[in-house]
Image 1 (cartoon, rainbow, N blue to C red):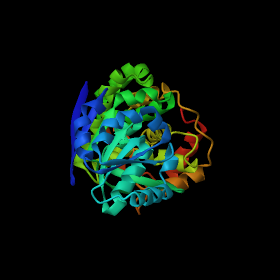
Image 2 (cartoon, rainbow, N blue to C red):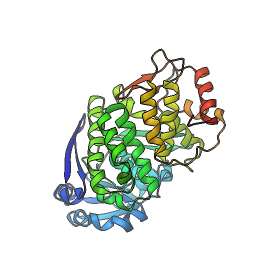
Image 3 (cartoon, rainbow, N blue to C red):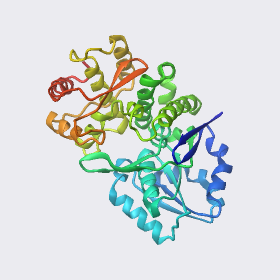
Length: 367
């Protein structure tokens, strides 16, 4: 079964097709979009080897196809990679009406979208995410970016795809850690936006972590619908869309401090959510997160069997958080849960409180 959604944004409408077999379902749309154009497929060697044949109908519709390779994981998201993509697209005769198809995980989609948004001031883009994180989060909403060594996603722009095709059958080849990483993003949205979805995850967690495409399809669709509603209300992340950064202030700082190695993005965000729970329960809050809500999220994250939190100096993490792209001149913005189904964006978490809670958290993150 496939689910069809639409994301309306200032530059138009993105069609979203989700489900087991979504690529076959969207074959005609993909073919019409690529028909007669130069098609640049940005992907990784691993994804092409595993799933490349799934794009054969789209390639057949294009006038010609050029495959541009990027590396797996966060290492793809660099200015050097983007510059190489631009140069290769130009050398291959790319034009203003050429097409870019991002075929890979969230990092591949980010750098491909960034390259497409900048090349000749913007060329058409389609996202075909092959990871759970990509399907529920990175491919939706138009945010594209690359990293600088000191800060994740610090150079980017909004460039919405014409179409997102999230085929949950592609997830069957993912290792357990990648499925876990993607599920963290679903849990993040469910806890703040869709409590019923949180209940589905709690019930079906084992099947989800096994990559069952039939179990994943409704979860991906519900998570996508939740994100679409937020993005439509706040397309440029000036208000409510900031709630989607729950866990990301600490999570991004953790990734940068580790040199983008050792933890997957979702795993870092999971620790970011745990730290946010600590802040939301701090005596400094006038309204504290109820203990039962905090305990429910903590128990679900424990079931994911996360890798241990690496040892890092608090000062290094504080410095990385200060460079976060969500920071403002007046300081950090924190997304903290108020209760199940409700979050707040706060700018009044003082440096002394952050230091105190961070030291305790690093000593015992699950306490």
